[in-house]
Length: 143
Image (cartoon, rainbow, N blue to C red; front, side, top):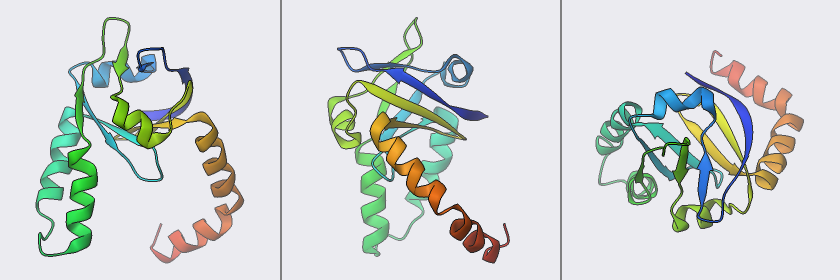
């Protein structure tokens, strides 16, 4: 289970330290890909396989399905933490997420998200200010 919010810096080579609490779950390798809201998603291999199977089951005839599969799969890259617990984030993914020097790593149960620090702060402020409206909509879904 991946939970929590952590601030880390990218080094000059584009490597990011994985929070120590997450390293064991990702030690056998992981997949990093484009996420939603201009962040990056990181899945342990087992979680990724489960998601990939669901993506491949989406109807090929629907444009939204094709677009989402392309977003997730074409941007995917294997990563293995090095001896210091860092992963190398490919250039195209750093550009997609607008990652500069400071990043936020957020644990979201079955995945990790990597955000540019400023983008995360803006997203969090927007979401926190709309929390009552969001809660009401989720209540309609039975949550």
